Length: 79
Length: 271
Ligand SMILES: Cc1ncc(C[n+]2csc(CCOP(=O)(O)OP(=O)(O)O)c2C)c(N)n1
Ligand code: SF4
Ligand code: SF4
Ligand code: SF4
Image (cartoon, rainbow over all chains, first blue to last red; front, side, top):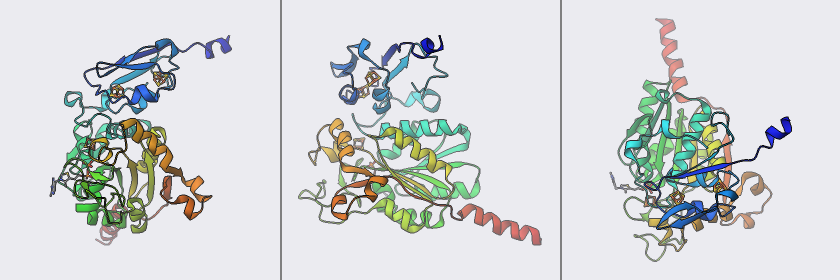
C-alpha cells in the first residue's frame, strides 16, 4: 500500500502567464519531453500528458511566466 | 513548484529585462536560496548599483537600496557597520563592480566585511548598449571594440580571492540548482562572499558576438565551463579557454564588523 502511494502517478498542471512571457523559447527548447510549443510569440502547452513535472522549464524561465505543479502532491510538502 | 510571490513586488512586473536575459534566472535562484535559509524578509537588505542587473532590487520585497554606479559596496559597508544583524546582499554587474567600482570591490574583499555579493557577469555594459567592460574577453566585440577587444580581461573571482574574501564561487544560469546552493553557502559564510554568475546578455553581447539565441547562450555555458573537481585533473592546455565553476575559496577569516566590535568592547571594559 505504501508502495502504491509512493508511486502515485504525477499529474502536471502547467500555468503560463502570457502577460509576463516574453517568448524567449527557453522553456520550449530545454524541456526534455517536448511538452511546450510557441504560439504567436508566447509559450503554450501542447502535450501535457508527456510532462514528467521535472520543473526545468520553471527553473530556467527568466520571467516567472511558467509554473508547474504536480496535482497529486500538496504544495506544502512538494519539493 | 516554488512560490516566489511573497518575495516579489508584483506591481513592478513584467521585468524590464530583454527576452532571454539571464538575470531573471539569477533572481529566482537568489529568492530560493534566501527561502531555504529561512531568513525573514526584514532581516535582508539588498543593495545594487547601476546597470541592467542592478535593476533587480526594484522587484524584491526586502529592504532595498538602488544606489549609484559602482557604489553599491560603499552603501552596503555602511549598512553592515551600522546594523550588523542584517544580511546585506549586493547585486552588481561586471562593469559596476570592476570598472567604476573596482576600488570599492577590492577593499570590501580586503576588509572581509560580512557582505554577500552576487556579481552578474555578462562580459559587457548591458544597460548602455554594449561597451567593453574590464571583463570582456580578449577578441570579443563590443560597441567600443568593433574589431575585437585587444585588452586582457579581469578574473573577477581571482581578484576577490587575492584580496582576502572568505568565500568565492562561480556559477552559471545553465545550472540554476547549483547556483542556488552556492548563493545559500555564500550568505551563510561570514565575511566577504562572492558568487560570480555567468548571466547571458543576448542583446548587447550575444548578438554582436554571434553567440546565437538565448538558448544557445545557456547551452554554451555547459560547454565552456568545468567543475573545480574536473579542473584539478586537467592540464593547463586542456583548461585553456575554460571557465571553472564551483567553490573556489571557502575559509574562515576574521570579519571586519566583528573586529570593530572587539575594539568598541575593549574601550567599554576599560571605561
Ligand atoms: C557615474 C556614472 N557613469 C556612467 C553611467 C552610465 N552607465 C550606466 S550602467 C553602466 C554600465 C553597466 O554595466 P554593468 O555594470 O556590467 O551592468 P549590466 O547592465 O551589464 O547588467 C554605465 C557605464 C552612470 N549611470 N553613472
Ligand atoms: S516540467 Fe519538465 S517535462 Fe514538464 S513541461 Fe516543464 S520541462 Fe517539460
Ligand atoms: S521561458 Fe518563460 S518567458 Fe521564455 S518562452 Fe517560456 S514562459 Fe515565456
Ligand atoms: S541588455 Fe543584456 S543585460 Fe540588459 S536586459 Fe538586455 S539582455 Fe539583459
